[in-house]
Amino acid sequence: MLVESLLFLWSTPLSAQNTAEMKQSMSAGYAPVNGIKMYYEVYGEGNIPLILIHGGGSTIETSFGNLLPLLHDYGKIIAVELQAHGRTTDRNKPETFEQDADDVAALIKFLKLEKVNILGFSNGGTTTLQIAIRHPEVVNKIVAISASYKRDGLISGFFDGMKNASLDNMPAPLKKGFLDVNPSQKGLQTMFEKDKNRMINFKDYDDEAIKFVKAKALFIVADNDVITIEHTVKMSRMVSGSQLAVLPGVHGSCIGEVCVNIEGSKIPEATSLLIKEFLNEQH
Image 1 (cartoon, one colour):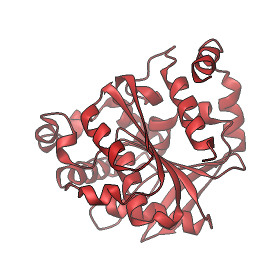
Image 2 (tube, rainbow, N blue to C red):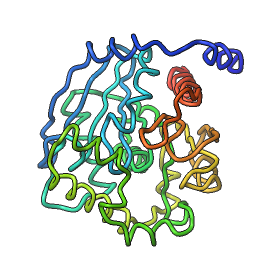
Image 3 (tube, rainbow, N blue to C red):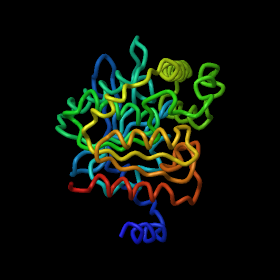
Image 4 (cartoon, rainbow, N blue to C red):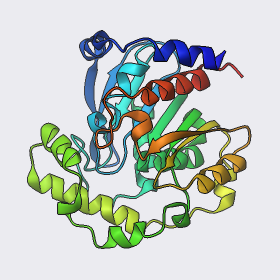
């Protein structure tokens, strides 16, 4: 049945009407959480809300601009921007995955939501794991795309490259994406430094913390990702009842992330179908 659905989907062109309809129905706001004003966008109605958490150095648009229209028929979707990213303000504290998790949990409570599904990409996937660990009471299901919980889960040389990185090394589409929604060169530099330091100072999570995740989970990784397949397999086996998908491509290509989106690729459509099927399962 899934194969038949994929074949049908691949033969059906994505209508630009989905994007237009979502933009028309979108509402946006700022939530006062833990000393920052967190920007969020709300799309659609019904169903258990799905929270989207972007990757490092990103905005809602750069991570999810191509995925959101593919999820238009899911129901209620809430996309957020983390500390110092995009339209969300900064605080005089380092950005950490734990703090990001607490911020998103505070947003969920601010919006008076009881249980949510959460989808996070890359750093957003790692934040998603932290929410499931630190705030299990608000989590129904999680989709962790290219997430990590240990430093050795990333490809060799990643952290050495991060230590020496400067704003000049940041991909141009991500810089443009930030400045499009927040035209502040100083803000861009601040975001870059906080993101960089969040990764440099990243400390391994205990295996027991991952085993503590009780939410149903779908782990997704690309076969040429910056996260190793072996690391993702290990995580999926530690979370009881989780599902695993290894998709062709590179970091972000499965969701059409702005730096790697391939015109005409059907992989993001396939990813959206997997996500919706997982989230809509009743058991």
